Length: 353
Image (cartoon, rainbow, N blue to C red):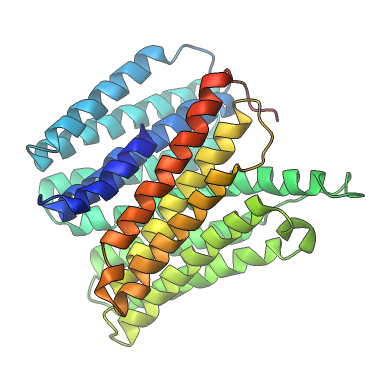
């Protein structure tokens, strides 16, 4: 369903509607709401040893999502109200699972969920789209948290496939991850309270530098031999480029901040969702962690969409809307083709680790 929302969100650019507001709502709310719900109701149950049935919760969440989806075509304000209820229910459900397990290792998950909910409520109360746009960076915090867990899996899998490295262990540096998250939090605070300050742009440069520092832990040929590591690396690289681009654009008054924010939104947020779709989809269906051909093409298409909207659009308007939208539509259709067959032919299985 989340992938279908991505296709829909990109398709609205080809309609005569207010596609700017609608595509923003579909991507930031509907698409990501389902992605988080699917990931957390799968992963968090394992991390907190939650054994109870989630069926009734899934029905409630889907009802809130579907109501919001329908209302989006009539009243975006009401649609935002119902998606806020979706986030509230998801926050409370995750809080209950974490509290029941007395698990203080998952406070980061609660942190970004509360952040999304808070910014959505602020937007509903104030009508200020700044709080809607800044949600992109709340999702970046989520990426930094969740991708850290994913990197452990990818690194371990890569080393396992290398001859003579059975005893090798990949341990990502959590300090770099925490520094990057702190930098993004500082940027958000500056943007909220000191929006006109140049410090906002210097904070963006700090964010980009922190993400770049994270990349050095992957600089081993044994890791780069594997496509899933390269894809993860490029996602983090473009995230850093996006931050640095916003920072330098603001300092030197290049007026390219929106371009680079879209680079982050597509090549970091949307790309990371597709990455997790693939990793979780394969591991929870009993498959080897080997991306299928259509999935690899889909990753390339998403990267090209981000480059088109974030960088090339500066040089030619043709790269601005319809080309990146088309690339994202095709990318998620390819993912749906691959994983419809996988989910149809394989039962859900626990994480092999």
